[in-house]
Image (cartoon, rainbow, N blue to C red):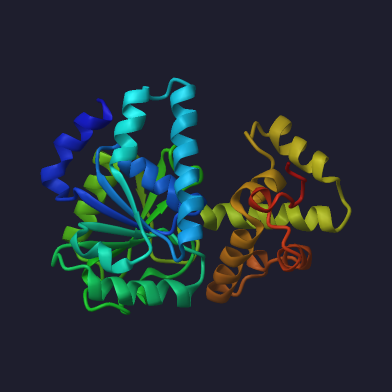
Length: 298
């Protein structure tokens, strides 16, 4: 089934035609691309004109690469770009059927955004979603006057390529919201969805983060070099990417933030971020996006 066909089949079920994405960083841009390529009208917001232009360039380059690699035609690339618009004013989200927040993993920042969205999004049936990878959804839901319409929709990086999306209902999320979210993500966007309880880390990060932290501790203690750790998991366990390379790809600040959130909830030592990880974040060595992490990137 083609993307356009998926859109036609599920549109009446999900009732979602206009999507808003808050944040146009690595994840936000990827989510916006997925939605636009699936035939949806997408409005992307950033805090400043400079950040918005960087995000727009990121999207244009990603779509251009997809066309160069034969993943889509030039016509499809142009049509996708036409479905993307950009703004620095969340007030422009008034007509959106679904808004996905994809900003920094900070509870206060996300809560403030949800409070604004609650005021500006006029549709009484609009879904307000977060791409958070660790923050309890119920905390975001109760910051609004429509907690039954708030849900976690957690994409994985890079969103245009990774097939999995976690759906995380809060205790307050209504069954109709869950059904509509599943329809748009699993149908219109063509992703594979799994359901997770509203517990820090959900399914994937609850398994992944302790693994990444263990690799950091092993490197920090001098048991093995970074190359041997990554080669061990790639060549010995058939992982497509070693844990330290993967941490660099995710972003060391994101890894540390998710670890902190999980440790705060469960108080288990395996979730505690190692000192080396914290020092690297303090030094700005955040991984690929910063040009340096456990490895150097040009």
